[in-house]
Image (tube, rainbow, N blue to C red; front, side, top):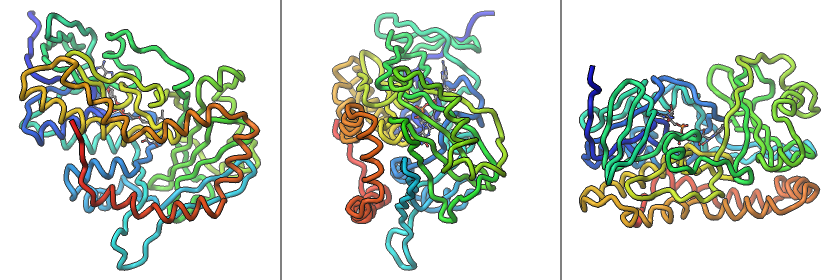
Length: 407
Ligand SMILES: Cc1cc2nc3c(=O)[nH]c(=O)nc-3n(C[C@H](O)[C@H](O)[C@H](O)COP(=O)(O)OP(=O)(O)OC[C@H]3O[C@@H](n4cnc5c(N)ncnc54)[C@H](O)[C@@H]3O)c2cc1C
């Protein structure tokens, strides 16, 4: 049997949030393309399942009805009205935005939804008029012949494409082809996730909780509430710190749940729904070059996880939108060389620079100062005042302001 050959101008590898968003905006621009994913949706992805205001911003830009009607009506999505920080000294500080009746921006600061549901929600929006979406179709081989990409898939197709969009996550086949899938421990975090049922003390405002355990700098334990009394519980630590001190994430995670004086009481009557699942976080502080001749990288494949919060869904979706705009211009000019994409990195990092600076500063301070600093900062009235002063601006950006990209 001869292999089927498919020709396309644009091929997206991966249909997680970054790849699906790229496809959704390409379709909005009327651009036919191919989307391949090794998995069949709905599928799980190890994550904290927290959707920040960047996610809202991209979805609203796609269609305001998604954030104003679809999310609130969907039982898999849960609105979260703020964050609870628990610092090393066990002190709790809440940052809540709970608008009263008649407020102009009565929107939550976060949503949570299991990735199994959120990613499926997104791929169901992929537009078959413009996107040939093939699930269960992993890319196994990537070659460049002249100016054209040749891909071989697990289902036997041979694909030829002028532009490749690498949206295939942290274990990216595109990065491997480029010889770039090296882990830089200073800019990478190891993480664990475990779903639980019945964790005690969850706040009725569905606050997402972040705990900084004492003596374990550059790491955090989190509890993110989910619908139906479930919670996503996890722990992450910068890999360089873990390697330097010989920390074993699984042991720490278990000890926090079983013996930590602040967290353990919350789990005494709770029930784990799975074994802890591990995955990596490629941090944006790595500043990967995310473009080249005939390709763009989006999401985790481009190392776009916010290094201070560990959030990569929103940054990945933002990169997907920006990549679609750069793809359109390349198609209009019929030119796919690196020169066409030279401002792509500027546009994706523009939104991450201050977090990258903060992360680099945190990596330079000693563990004692780190603990002391967080203990002082979280409950500090000036920090709280700054949050309440800025929160409306964040919501306005997500729900009202235009989304400008310069290219
Ligand atoms: C424990 C943990 C907690 C986290 N918590 C949060 C959080 O609360 N909020 C947040 O915003 N971010 C969080 N993140 C980060 C977030 O999960 C990622 O940044 C996000 O999934 C990146 O999306 P993506 O589309 O780039 O990649 P992915 O979601 O990884 O999607 C990649 C897709 O590519 C497909 N693929 C891979 N290889 C191939 C191939 N060869 N051929 C075809 N398809 C392929 C995969 O099947 C997959 O569907 C967390 C991560 C971890 C590990």
